[in-house]
Image 1 (cartoon, helix red, strand yellow):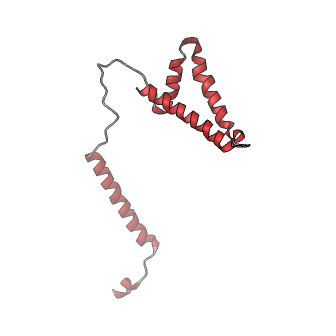
Image 2 (cartoon, helix red, strand yellow):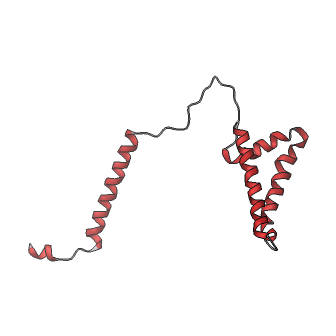
Image 3 (tube, one colour):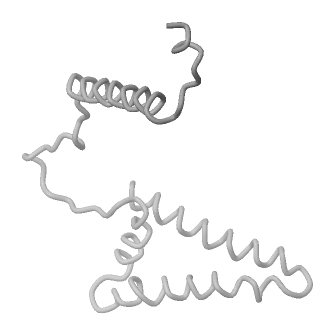
Length: 125
């Protein structure tokens, strides 16, 4: 009997069985808790309110930009201005060169960021 207690435990099967039992207990506990307290699925929908489609928050600036260019000019707000902004962002390493380059690059990035934030806030209001 004392010989069994003195023997070293090996990973297989001793520790492996302990780990498997602990994992099974944790999974059962997680399952019981998730069944007792189910998560809510989204927000409540008011079916009497008129439908007003809105994009996700990260596209609100583009939504507002397209709103400023209705009809045939929507291509300008939906494609040309965003492409120009991306090109301007790609040009920042070249703007960064020369005298006061870092300041000019920070100003370009700040103006673009400020424009996106303002357009997003305007579309929420």
